[in-house]
Image (cartoon, rainbow, N blue to C red):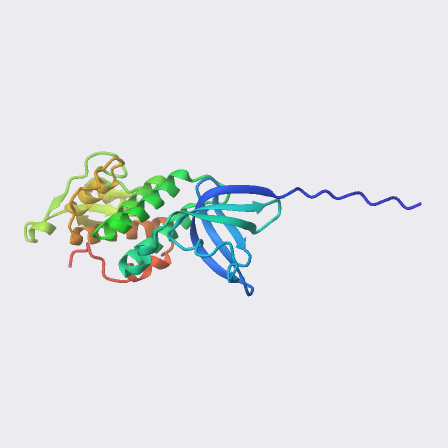
Length: 280
């Protein structure tokens, strides 16, 4: 008599609820959508929203970029895609898509958020930083301001923040060097190296060059502005003009590019231009 095959038991699906920002959306089949989402407590997740394009869909208008959502999904062992079952809008930010500069800044924030998150790893602080930056993009007169603040906070959150006030190598003072023949705004510059972690004193810069590391210089006022923006409890009312913001963003974006060892898609147009802090 043949023995009966052993019964195979499958783990029942787990139902999960979490706050989220959508990072990407891909059409799947005729009526469904695959979404990549950044969540507060579960890191980056990939979900399948069935029937999104049907007239009677329960997801109507609830899966837009930039909105803070509360998502419910089912997942289980071995599943590459969770099954999205519900989506509720917590914070609506549809006006970001009406302004090209704000739209681009918001996409950059989402792209960095995707880079900084891991699957199934809580990242509540980084998630909250992104939500706060998107909120400020709605109201701040200059979109570069919330974006630069997020870039610097993003680096700090990952433990990659550049040294902006002291020498990155020895931790001591790194005074500026005077250029009397330059314009006042270019007359004081500091030594800086992304490979070495940021600002450098003269001795450490000489050692870095001897090791074949690239060392340049930046206007002191730009690093001072970046240091103020990077303060954890900085006042958001700190005044900065548009020109200085662009210079600070140039430093932050190029430092990010080096640390990530890749040029994010949203940075290509900005970084393809000239180095704005370089001495002509």
